[in-house]
Image 1 (cartoon, each protein chain N blue to C red):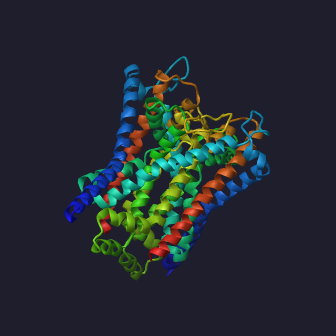
Image 2 (image 1 turned 30 degrees about the vertical axis):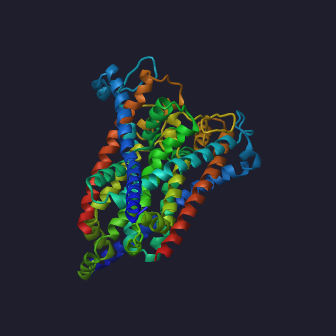
Image 3 (image 1 turned 90 degrees about the vertical axis):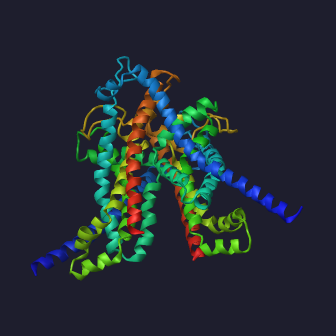
Length: 300
Length: 284
């Protein structure tokens, strides 16, 4: 074998390896296509039996009862209510943490506290569900006696604790990336750290902070076990945080635990619910990706 | 003058508020774990770990669920690891700046944000029904492998990116081909970082409940699984099942099983942080 043949062999080997690696990367595209196909096919079958107008406007969701109604609104309101409570709790706290760590705390503190805070997001959600049901709900009931055993308030609050690190970590990165010249200019004008943070740094890092909040919302909307355990399984169109509700995700779990015939209309409801959830999180993720791309270009 | 004093006071107030917020989450977590510990620790003994499930709370154990979790963890790793690392290498070393690369990048970023329960619906249709795996360990592992794939890819890319350019240049200067450079220089140099990402991804997989419930994993499995095609339960599903029962004995069982699950999660996270620190100091 001459040196040329050897070179050719090597070229062929390199090509084969590249194609193999490429195929692996394409698996991720296949996953997306698979998700969209699976959800759409089952959802289209669902909508051939249930009118989409009823799905979007009916105020009752009772597919598992004899008097069947297929209105997604009660599940949607449950999802939005629990997520709203979580975000309302997590945003002020997460943002305060990020400002404190980035502007007030000593450098060494940052290195220790960030992994510790991220531990909050590493706890399995079934564990948070247990906390919400057995610790937080009884605790809240001592203040609000009318609070039901299953409710969106304690599920939302515990979900808020879980998503704190999503907001604090990403916002802190954004604040950290603001050029020092901005800080120095503000201090030179005699501003305190607080004034500097809220009037200069937070506006300068706003895109990163917005991204962190959008990702947290998306995470809250898709969260399953906390709400399945602590928020109840009663779809109802309400914004009262003290009564049991059901989220889209909790409904999918409820059906999956039961004995539903494959191919039945009940079976297809979980895909109709799933595609609704997917559309919401997809939109949120796409928006955050767009903002992140723009934000990266600004500083690099 | 008054204004300045007011501003300084506000500044101090915010500082304490910031400290309070930073520790709020951690304190709450400590309270939670503490209360669980009190509830569950006396229930943990060798019998609890090695007993099969039972309808009687005091005789029930976590053996089948624990074995299910181990099976799932091993198979998920075997499936997700090669694909994830290969995809990351392709994106970082081959596809740079191409149209295909930006499409793949948007796609992976989106996949990372898809709720885990949606992966369950995908697994239910594709693995359980179409590929006829049934509600088996194999179907569960494939589902979770797809779920952690974006995490593995992103962290592997970061680790490869962190390898100094000088190592690449030196390898090419010695006449090494692209693949030789990757397999003999880049991968060994980024090994610590890749390992960290994989352990973190697996610690996420071991706590996942929803997608496995959707594909039909059971709460009650009489015997520990013996092959990948057996039906199974995992620790989080066992916990969920015990939580949803009214008797107090099962709540104690749930607390005890949570201690074991948290132990596994925290140990995995600890190992990951250890490898990351060691690897980062080696790179510098």
